[in-house]
Image 1: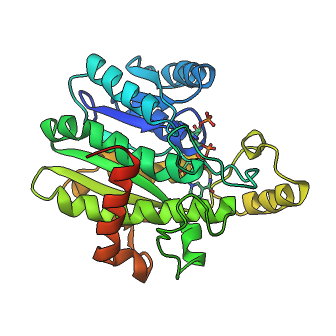
Image 2 (image 1 turned 90 degrees about the vertical axis):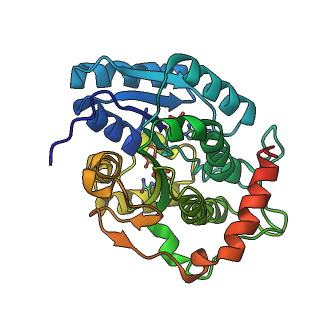
Length: 292
Ligand SMILES: NC(=O)c1ccc[n+]([C@@H]2O[C@H](COP(=O)([O-])OP(=O)(O)OC[C@H]3O[C@@H](n4cnc5c(N)ncnc54)[C@H](OP(=O)(O)O)[C@@H]3O)[C@@H](O)[C@H]2O)c1
């Protein structure tokens, strides 16, 4: 299906790399105003130039945000609203999966970095832009989780371990943050019923990461990643689901669902549907994000 998003403004975090960049190009090709929210000026500007050239769409911009910093997120939200009068889509693609972090590292806000980037920052950014999303309705929020969560069917939100106080590995922190995204999606979708703002979560599958994204991980892990990559789909293939959820008229009224790379609704773990946990997660995240 071909779409026309002329006149629509969409933010995509982490639009300078991988799936986010592939999705930014797809959105630009169908005419959207695309704002890539990136932490690096150099990588953001380079991606903007490449996508403008490849799409012929000059309404592609980059703006600075560090999703691990609440001050940066607040500055971004103000700067975005100074420049743009509407917001039709907010795609929370950026995530930290830095496997070299052997110990929990706290951000300037006192939150473990992976949970801060992949959950608390997303919660805060949505909160700050929600009035604009509502004013621009019908509008869409898209969150991103991981198929790897299927390997942790019993994982639950560990309210006594959010900063890795009891146990920590970067993998554990990552999947924990992604489970939080799934629950947050379901909860937010219910809270936004009747506003015209939908919320859906993508279950990203194994997608090829270029070598330079692997950072300084040990050689044995690099080998595992090389093997994983041989079975992975391309960022472009996964980005089709981003485009589908951002643009397809068939999903305009569908909210609170979890989607695979074939644009099919899928189920998440049993624990992810517990409303009591959603409520506690909401209250805890509001406190961590400094939202009263
Ligand atoms: N690849 C997979 O197999 C896979 C599997 C499951 C889920 N996912 C999910 O898919 C999404 C996209 O991942 P990808 O594969 O495209 O990886 P990627 O190429 O490494 O892209 C990640 C993006 O997130 C950005 N980012 C990280 N920390 C940030 C921060 N603090 N502030 C702002 N931006 C930040 C990165 O920016 P920099 O360029 O500055 O680092 C980069 O643009 C992520 O949510 C990831 O968890 C991927």
